[in-house]
Image (tube, rainbow, N blue to C red; front, side):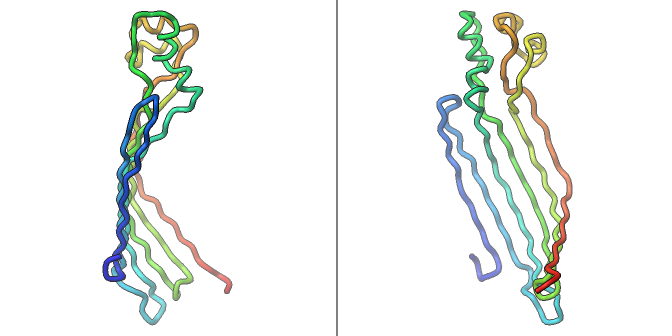
Length: 166
């Protein structure tokens, strides 16, 4: 809390997993009030900023059905890399305005999220298209879970709320 107007929160997440080792996920949030409520019903104006990274570990089933594990069990001498966690990086910046002595509020924010190394099941015939060697794909009966895709999502988000009855 800086001067009762700006609030900062920061942290580090740490995950240790036998499947993918150790990962640190930093986060930072800042909210600052440009002005406090004034008489006449115009409420506070708040600007927010959030940035961080995250992970989502694979499930036990995904791990046991991963390309790395299944090829290893098949006796093949090909060794694809182990499945890793899904990763995300997020950023959002927003403005929130209060009205009517705290009875109503509107928000607008911009977000930009990047998701990487998403885990999905890939059939045996498609595995070579995602970078798996033909020899590793042929060593499987059906298919396997791999880290295969990534995407970005960004847009504006708005919301409004009002407390109509007291």
